[in-house]
Image (cartoon, rainbow, N blue to C red; front, side):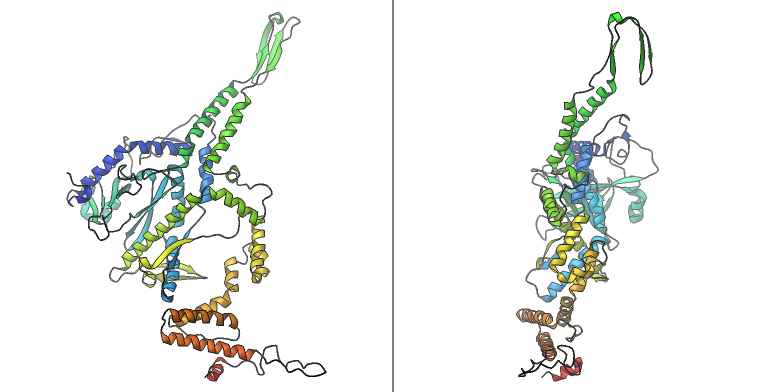
Length: 605
C-alpha cells in the first residue's frame, strides 16, 4: 500500500502533497462548476471562471436584457440580518476561586482586544457573504514574525476529499492560494532556485501579465489521538517544501462557517442554490415579456372597399389616405396576458418566503403600526426565528475564532523572552493586557457568546426603549431623552449609576489581590457596601482565602459599621407638651461633623 502524503519523507513531501491535492481538485470539478453558477446568479455577471486569471473576465450579457435579480436581493437582505450581529466571547470559570474569576474577566477583555487587533469584524462580514453565496466561507489563523495573522480564504480555495468528509469531520484539509513569487523568495531565501520554477495550478487559460504568482498549498492532517506524532502540517508549492512540521492540535487552523450544512458531507448549501430554479423561471418570464412588449403596437384594420392608397409613418403616428366610404378601424391589442406579471410577482415573493426573509426587510421597511419597542422586538423575533440555527452557527464560528486566537497567543508566549500583548477597552480606559496575566488552563473555563447592541434602530423604537430603561432604573430618568441622540452615552450613564457598586467591587478586588487598602468613607453607600463586603467575606471563607485578607475584610466591615453608627443620630426623647427642638446640624450629621478616617480607625478595638 502506498504511503499517504503525511507519511512521506521530507525530500518528496512537496510533490506528493501537491499531487494528492491536484487529484482531489480534479475529482471535484463539479463542485467548482456549481459554485461558478451561484456566483454568476448573485453577481448577474457571466464571469468566465473562478481561477486567478479568469475571475475578472466576463462574457457580456445583452445590454438591453431585462433583469430582476431576486437572488441578490435575498442574499443582501439575509446578510443585513446576520452579519450585523457581532458576537463576543465571554469566559466563565468552572469552580474557580476569585483569582481565576478575575483572570476570566481579563481574558474576556483580552480576546475582545484580539478581535479588534486582527480586524475580525471586518473579515467576518466577507466570510458571511461567501457562505450566503457559496454555502461556506472561512478564515485562516497563523503566526508570522511572532504576531498573529488572520486571512480570509475564498470558497473555491479549500478542498476536502468526498469520502473522508462524508460525516462532516475530515481528518485532512487542503487550501491553496496564489502568492507573489518575490514575496516567497524574500521569506525563504534558501528555496530561491526551487521557487523560480514553481508554477500556478493549471486553469486552462494562458494570460500574459506583469504579476508573477505561484500556487501555494497548505495541507493538514490531524493526529490520531491526543499526544500522537502522526499529525502533519505542510506548506509547499508544486516543487518546493516551504514549511513542514508535526501537527499536534485536534482541529485545523482554518475556521469554516457553513450557511446551511448538507445532511451528508462536508459542504453546505447557499442561498443561490435554494433559489436557482425560481431565478431561472423569473429570467424566462422576463425574456418573454420583453419580446412581447417590443412587438406590441397599435393595429389598423381596413376593408378592401376602403381603397387605401397612401401611407406616411413616423415613430409615433401613421397617416393613412384612402378613398371610399369605409374608414379603417384602429385597434390596440394587449401585448401580453396579465397572468405573466402575476406569476412574476408570485415567484418574487416566494423566493423570500423560501429563505425566511421578508420583502419588507429587503426594502428597509417595517409593518405599519409597529412603533413601540415591545412590538418591534416581537416582530424582529418572528422575523429572525427562521435564522435561529444560522445565528447559532454564526456565534459558534466566533467562539472557534476566539479559540484559535488563544492557541496562537499561548504558543507565542511560551517561547523564551517572548510575550503577546493586546490593547483592549476596560471601562473608559484602553489598557494593554499580556497573555501571561490572563492565561488559564483550557479545562478551567467555559466560553459563551456575549451579545452586543441594546437600542432598536428606528426612532420610535429608541424612544420606547429609553422609556422602558428609565422605568427600570429610576436613576437614569434625567438622561432618558439624551439616550435618543447618543448624548450622554448610555454606557457612561450606566457606569455612573453603578459607581456605588463599582467602588466596593474595587475595594474587594484590592484586598483579594493584595493591593492598596481603601478605607470606608462617609460619602459611600455604606449599607450597600457593607452588604457586598459581607457576601465577599463569606465567599472568601468558603474559598479558603488567606487569613490575612479575611482579616482585612472584617476590619473594613467594622469600620463601615462604626461610620453608619456615628452617622445615625439617637432618637430624640419625647417631651411632654410643646414642640420638639430641631437638630443643630443637617440630618444624620453628628456635632462637629464626621471624624477623619484615621480618627475613626483609632476608635475601633
